[in-house]
Length: 306
Ligand code: SF4
Ligand code: SF4
Image (cartoon, rainbow, N blue to C red; front, side, top):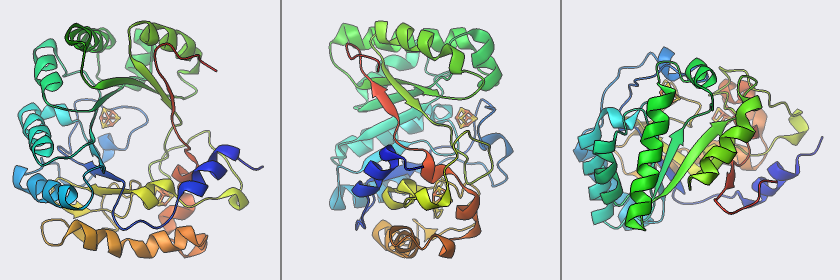
C-alpha cells in the first residue's frame, strides 16, 4: 500500500549540512512514568545539562543556522529544572536563535512559572496531554494530575490572552487505542480555549514499543528523524538518532567536537537512508517504526477539523 503522506514527506528530504532541528536534553529525569515512553526504564545516568554546554551549542547554532528549531526536551522533563530552562532560553534569545520550543508534560508549569515562561522569548510551548477524562489521562500519563495540568494550561492560555502576544501554545494528543474515543472532546475543549491542537502517531522509540503503524518494507522512506534532527544528551553525547535513547550508537560528544563535525559523521547513516540502502542501517533501524510516524496534524483555533 502506498502512503501519500509519507511520499510527500520523502520528497522534502535531502542531505543538509546542518540539522534543521536540534533536541536539547536539559534534564534526563522525569516526574511522570508515562505508559508509552522509554524514560521510566532508561538505564543511562540521569543528570542536567551544564549551562556552559548549552552556550557552546547555542553559539554554534547561532553562527551557522539561527533558524534551526531548538527543542528543549529529549529524555526527560525540562521543568524539573526551571531556573536552568529559563537561563537557557534567555541565552538562546540573546545570541539570536529564532526558534525556541519547549516540550513539557506541563504538570510543573504552575501559575507562578507562567509569567517567566511568557517573558522568556520562547516561540512555542507544547503540552503532552493525550487524554480528556481524568481516568484516561492518568492511565497514560502515570503520576500526573489531569485537573492540575488542565488548570496550568488554561492559566497559561489566559495569561497569554491578557498580554495579547506570546508563544504559540499547542496541546498534543498522541493517538492510541486507550484514548482515541476522547479525541473529539479533547479537540473541541482546547480549540475553544485558544490552543493549537497537535495530533500525532505513537512512536516506537527505536522499536521498543508497539504502535498501530504498519507499512510494508517497499513503502519505506528515509527516516525523517535521522535526516533532519540532531540530539544532545545532558552529558554532551550525541546519539545516532531519536531511537538511540540509551546512547548506544553515539557519534561523539558536543563538549569535544563541533556540532557540524558530529552532524557530518552521522552523514554515513543519512546516506544509507537517502539511497534506500536500508539493509545497511544498524539493527535498531530494522525493527524501528519511527520512519512511519508521518507529520503531526496541527489545527489552530478557527480552522476546520477535517
Ligand atoms: S512526561 Fe514525557 S519524558 Fe516523562 S515519562 Fe511522560 S512522555 Fe516520557
Ligand atoms: S528508523 Fe532508524 S533512524 Fe529512524 S528513529 Fe528509528 S532507529 Fe532511528
